[in-house]
Every structure is written in structure tokens, then in C-alpha cells.
Image 1 (cartoon, rainbow over the protein chains, first blue to last red):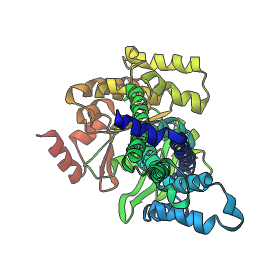
Image 2: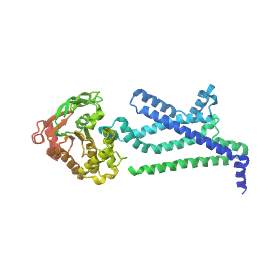
Image 3: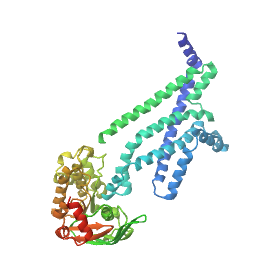
Image 4: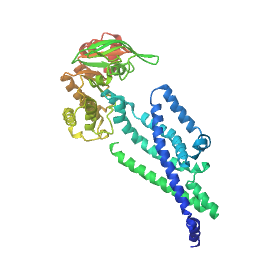
Length: 224
Length: 242
């Protein structure tokens, strides 16, 4: 009973749960924004990689190597402290963070898409072309629908990683789930409970993602 | 119908086809035999530009495949191809496999495409599989569907790249029977095959390929009974007498 009162003190008094709700809102917002940017830019990078033009392929390879070869927190801080300065100083942190995580995620998304398309049996493209389909029609009707099935699980897992990775946004002053736990700790001198609470919220969010993924996979099974 | 002039193909430094000159007339059924690595499949794949000839010319009904101005997609509609590994589209039903290209490429109406598809399924004896997905079919059934799919484009020539090599032995006949019917109807066919009995009985010309050239080109009885080249003889000894 005493512990319940303590929990109530930590999370409910002075409306402290609002920090967590706002943090949750921020984390989910950054993740969604980054996911959209990641998919759009990722598709573009993957297209460059698959273009069969040496120069464009090179751009794509350099981009992926650069992003994968440096820590996300360094990329985040470079974007916030070196690029978004001067006239851009007042850009909302949500936007800066969404862009940073989105550009980061794009490299991984591009690799997932590339692997999905290149992993298909090349006989599929040959069969489509031998029936008179153009390259783009073959991609649309034959390659992409099959590649998506291979790509989806890896893509969802990338979004799960993305959601968890946004927890470093505190480095540039974003108040996300993790920061909200820190704030509550600083007001209540209780370090354990806020962190556990935040951990549970992350777990719930990722479980929802995972569940969605399994449903999608199940639905796509019928033609395998 | 098909004319090949001085066809060469390199993979890197390796010369796979070393100058092939051939003419194939309408209605001819040509079996292409020879040891593996002799360039049989590459030759066949050059005829619909799945491989790009390094040098030389390929004319299909008078149009030069190698010419950049040729509309390769429209040309491929006239040249059907059947692959060793079937290459059916696994995310589409049998019927969808058959109607996709006629509708999207030729602009055939849904009703007409289905009519043609059902007629072809009847021909290959698989009407009851129209709504199945390919993974529910046996190898022999898959290959018969692949033949029907190629025929749905109403091609003038059919290329077969080892159509029975990936099949269990008991399924070879059902596929060869379909091909035999097709030959009887007068379809121009080029068949890369290891089925010597089929080559002997159905083809009216046999090419023996070795090291990137067509070493011998003769009617099947001549080629099988009186091979002119020592290499042909050696090859036939190996495949026939074991």
C-alpha cells in the first residue's frame, strides 16, 4: 500500500504523468516523421543503387557507408549543432530530430530494399521480359510485389530499431520518453520507477509493431 | 523466319559463341544438342536478347534484333520462351500468369485474354488448375503452364531452354507430349535438350553444338545414325550407350 502511494507520488502528483505523455507524443512523432523520410529517401537511394549507372551507384554506396559507419548520435549532433544554426536555429527539435533519424534510417531501408529485390530469382525478370513486358512493367507487376513480401518483416524491424534509437534525442534537447523519465527523477529523487515505466512503454509500442508485422506476414502467406 | 549471321558472344574474356551462321524456316523444329558449356543456352538466349550478342546479327522475321531502333518488347511478343526452371510468377494464380502479359502488353481485353487462357489450359490439360497458385503444382504441371503462358502471347517462334531438365523423370513425358502437339500444329520451335529420343522423333533438324560453334546441322536420322564429325560421334556414344 505504501508503495502504491509512492508510485502515486512519483507519477500522479503535480500531474507529472503529463511529462511522460508529452514525451511519448514526442517519441512517436519523431519516429513517424523519421519513418516517412526514411522510406522515401531509402527508396531513392535503393533506386540509385539499382540504376546500373556507375556514378549513381557510387553516390548510393557512399551514402550508405557514411551513415552506417558513424554513430547516430554523432549524426544527430552534427545536424543540430552544425547545420541547423543561424537562420535555421529556430527549427523545432521535432523536425531536426525527424530529419536526422530519417536520413539515418534511409541508409538501412535502402539496403533492405536492395537485398529484397536482388534476392529474387533473376529468372522472374527474364520470364517477364521474355513475355514482352518493359523493364518498368516487369518491376511493377512481377518484381516489386514479390520483393515487398521479403522486405516487409525487415522494414518493420527497422522501424522498431528506429523507435528505440530516438531515445538519444535528449542530446539535442528533445524531450522524449527517456528525458521525461529523467525530469521526473530530478523532481522526485526516484530513479528506478520512471525508467521502468518508460521501458514498459517502449516495450508496449514495439509489441504493437511486432504484432502488426505478424498479421501482415500471415496475410501474405497464401500465395507462397 | 530466323536468320543468324556471324553471331559471337563473350562473357568477359571467354568466347562462348564463336561465329554462328544459321537460317531457320517457318515451321521447322530444331533440337539443339551438345555437351554442357558448349553454348547451347547462350545461343538460344541471344535469339530474344536475354543475352546481348557481342558481335553479329540476329534477324527475326526480317527485323534485326541487334539494331538499336528495334522495339525489343514488341519483338519478344513474337518469340515465346520456356525456361528450365519454369519461372512462373509465384504471387499470381495460374490464370493470372496467363492473362497478365496479353492484357498489359498487348492490350487484350480481360474477357478475350481469359478465353485464350482457358483454351490453352485445356490444351495442356490443366483447366482445373486455373485458380491455383504455382506452388501447388508439380514440376511437370508448372512447365506445362509455362508453355501455355508463352503461347498466350500468340508467338510465331517458341524457344525451349532445357524444358525437362529440372523435372522428375516421370514428369518428362507430359511436357514432351505438349511440345510434340505444338510441333504438329506447325509451330516453329528451337529446343535445347538432352532428350535424344525426343530430338530424334520430333525435330526435323538437329544442331550439334560444341565449344561455341554449331558443328553439325542435319536431319535427326542422319545426325544420329551417321554423324559426320568425330566430336558428334563421341558425344552420341556417351549419351546414348550407357
